[in-house]
Amino acid sequence: MAQRTESSTVIAASPAAVLDVVADVESYPEWTPEIRSVQILSEDDGWAEQVRFALEAGPVKDTYTLAYDWDVDEEGAGTVSWHLVEGGVLKAMDGSYVLEPVDGGTRVTYALGVDVKVPMLGAMKRAAEKRIVEGALQGLAARVRG
Image (cartoon, rainbow, N blue to C red; front, side, top):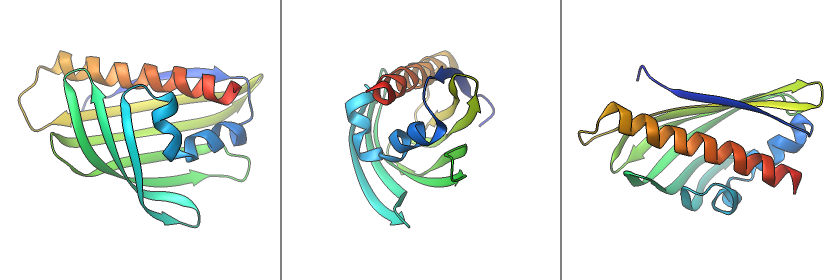
């Protein structure tokens, strides 16, 4: 998957506070408009390992499973990444949150690449990615602020 959508924002909170929200995957439907439901299928030391999602992002609607990798330090800085295990319409969904401490809080960079099994214009896929990325960053910032 060559193309990805990426965006960043600075949240006025520590990386640990941001990571707490990112790690609470069961609450994603409360702050990510495109996520309709979440089911944790497996965990490793309290971190979600495989998670089933129901997504509705414009033309992309699917139920799919992601595998997560939590490469973060004790302060919450680092990378949370995921890749598609299985999906109905999706044939790829690879993404990451990178959490970096900066003056005034945490820079969160969200990158996402999506590919579907059915023919779809690249512009439509990028629009769906952008909708997911922007909605997630706005929702994450609002959720961290409480």
